[in-house]
Image (cartoon, helix red, strand yellow):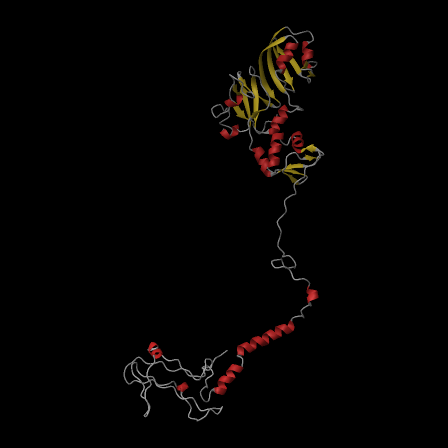
Length: 409
């Protein structure tokens, strides 16, 4: 709202010394008429300002009143102009003649901009539908709650497969994986703990889960890459090294695995110490025996070679002494028992006068030596020359090489 001063401000006192006088503004000059529109006499013009330190002369016949202490304390301050008596009457002073109607009309008449805004709001309200009643609107939602309405058309991320709950029925998942040749039981437990195993499309991340033996089992790409990075090593073990746990006075066969003993360093990958981690023998070979020994990080190969139902045969050349019984050769092929349990059928034949060839599909502790003792023979030398489709070949004694991609047990 525009405001109009009804009382013209008094001109500020001049600090210039001399006879210079200040003229009032042209808009503040009083009209020549004797009365304004309300019939009141026009306001007298403001007195002229005097230079600092001078006093206004008094009319004739009047004396100057003595100064009070309060006036002395306010010396140097410009007096506030007042147009009437009382605290709130200074603003209600009579405006100059000729401007009362104009200023009054400006206060009552709204500005053009505000009028346009009001008309625009009125038109918008007329276009909106009527607001529903309080009963139709329903209860007011709590503060902070989401407003009801259609969800934004934003694509949601694909939900991960639900974990498979443990069931008391069925067969343990790790056992099924080992029986199918997917991996060993130890590897199966490792993959399950990492969440890399899926049964019928559902992720399994808990050990001990039992499943239907006919269920579909798949591995995550991480598990497949892990299996591909694992190595299998073929060693020509000398006499005096144990294949498994070290014994007092004997070194383990894995101690022969190093860069210096690698036979195929020019054709295969170079040895790295990390390849010794989890490297375990797949089958035993006695301390006083020599020949092909398999050490692997891959549980699938280990189970294939030494599993309870393994069908991979092992070939040995055995040098013997003594007199073979009449039915000894037939009994060596089939008909012997060890520790009260019947042996699986074997294939035994003479190579020369003092050497036999054994082909077995099981590997009990010192099995060949004990079999020969039962038919009157003594073993003086034993060498393993083949495991499945992998032969010892020309691998020198005490050296090793990697299993090639074109070789299978």
